[in-house]
Length: 88
Image: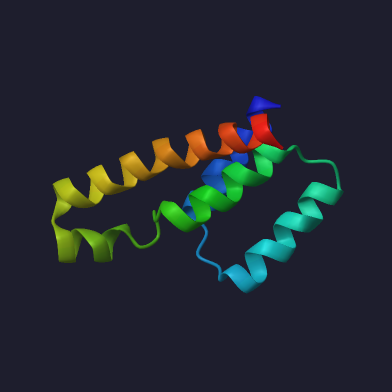
């Protein structure tokens, strides 16, 4: 449900793992019964939102731009998840 999707999005946003690990993990989660929405939220936030890397982004881009980039990325990641749920 929505709580699981929100949890997956938060975990994706704070986790820093390579795609070679993330995609098989997502496949396992899906096979175990997670919805397309939940898996897509995890993968899209994992690749687009960087809570762990935020300090480095702030240093390079400035606080305002780094937070803006992550906020916009979060919105788009969730939109992508919803679209994938609808079309798949």
